[in-house]
Structure formats: structure tokens, C-alpha cells
Image (cartoon, rainbow, N blue to C red):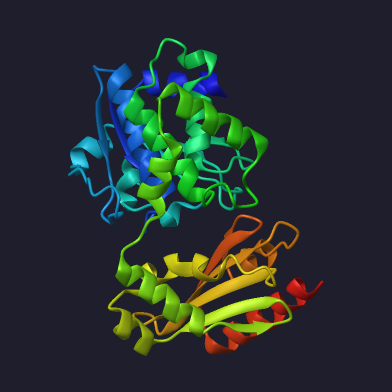
Length: 312
């Protein structure tokens, strides 16, 4: 499989890197780790990173023309479904290579390199970079930094159930190879400003608990109070993620555009919630997933179902 990825990259002079909408740390850090790795080692290739939505810690966005895309290799990162890619022009590319760590929900692309046991897409990329097929390539300090931050943010400082011994081993190798200072990178990725702290404090006051299932419902008036969009608020799911008495927790956020609710679901390792998410056309990892466009009735149904799972 590593060999196939190398052959695909070798066969194209133009490459565009894509990632999912509402990019998180893993999506953005992975995109720029791959970008720099390719720029460092394939100097004759023209490489761009596509996308429209920004991420707080990396605000770079390339302008990519339709003509460039039509003559390029598309590398899609960290997106289990094609609908979630933040620039749908990727479908016009000559060839589509998917690199991901999510369970395969809807196969897409001409070739897929997926490891759903990895803690982050950045971990999958590192396994690729150190493979024998890329032994002639170098991994710079900046690439190591991006890879480490990608793993760090997607595993929430190695706290998620997707963190494996391999995740920790690779993170250690990356830190050593790049001469990184893990504590400094952790501070960079997770320290937030006072406004962020105040919002999470308010979210915690709205917590409701039923049979060791915790949930918060964010309404339009809350979004107006915070001065944030629904997508921005959903990233605050971890505000209630460290309560010992909770087995499952969910943040429901009102989507004013579609007049419905989106849900971010999380659970401890023994409590599988992705099957419930898929019943409502959602998806993701076993213990971390999401659902979009829920009615109030569906929201209440999910509360009951997740409470039963959490009670077991």
C-alpha cells in the first residue's frame, strides 16, 4: 500500500491537498505537514493546499484555480465522506488519493490509504513518511511539529480511546526526530483566551445528567450571547468531557440556518456510540462522532438512547 501511494505521487507534477470542512487541528496540521514534506522532497512539483474555512492556529489558504485542479492529483485528508471536503472541486482532479483514519463510511477516490486504528490522520501520514518507499525523503523539524500537533489535538493530549501504544510510540519518535518540546506544543494547542474560558464555564452550567449521560443544549439565544456560530460552539464539547461520573456526553447546538440541531457525541472507551449516530445519518469513531440536522423530536430520542447506553 505504501508503494502505491509513492507511485501515485511520483506520477503527478501538480498536487492539491484537501481536508474537511470546519477544520480541526488534525485536519490542518496534517495538511501542512504533507505540504511541507512534499515541498522539501519533490522540488519539481507544484503543490497547493485547498480550502475556504480557517483554523485558529493556521490561517494559511492558497488560491487554487479550476485549471490547476483539473491537471492535478487530489490528496484528501481526514475526511471519511466526500461531502465533507472543503472544496468540492476536488472531484474534477485527474486522480484522487484518500488518506484517513476514520472508519470507511462511503468509499471515494481512486485509491484509499486508511488506517482506522490510528489516533489521528497525522499518525497515518507519519507511518507513510517513515516507510521504506519514502526512505530517500527527509522529515524537517517543521513537519515534525505539525505532525505532533495533529496527533496531540485529535487525541486531546492522548486522552481519547483512539490513542494506542503505536500512537504514543510515533509521537515519541516525532518529538525526538524534530527535537520538539512537548510541553510547549501542548500549551500552544490547548491554552485558550479568557472569552473561551467564560463560554465553557457557561456551557457547564447548562449540563443535564440522566443515568450517567451528560448533555447540554445550546439554543439561539446562547449563540447570540457568545457571539459565535454553531460550528464554533460545537468545538466546546470537551468542556464536559472530564467528569468522572459521565460515561457518555453530548453537546447539542442549534443551527439557525437550517433551523435544527447538530450534535457532537463523545464517550468513554467501553461505551460505543457510533452505531446510534449512524441511525440518524451521522458517523465517526466508536467513541467520538457527530450528527447533523436533528429535529427536537430526534434530539429527545437520542437523549433516551444514549442514556440507556451510558447506564449499562
